[in-house]
Image (cartoon, rainbow, N blue to C red; front, side, top):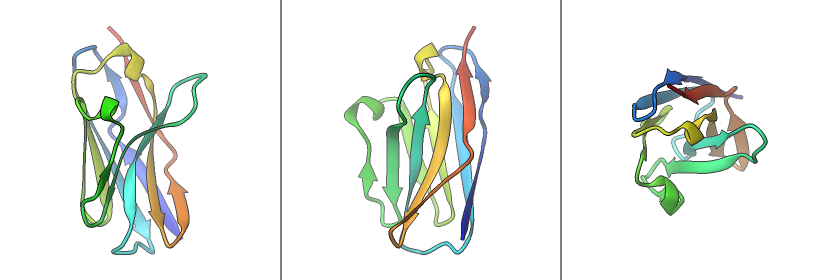
Length: 113
């Protein structure tokens, strides 16, 4: 079993930066994909970025200018710069290994003056 725990969410002013962290515990493979999704109220969950253990990045072009993902084997991080009110959402950590998908409980990020 795998558990994911996010941290680093909160209230940020527009233009500010934030770093989210997610630590995985349990039976973690050395071959996995970790990443971040987000879900705003009334919207579907959307991909921000995933990064495999060997460094393969999957991220929409629209997310590559302000969202930066990094990781080690058991943790993944998301640096968000120049935050906008529309970035307000619950940010979910994600891990996939051996055909199984795991989600964290979510970290609320609110961008407001």
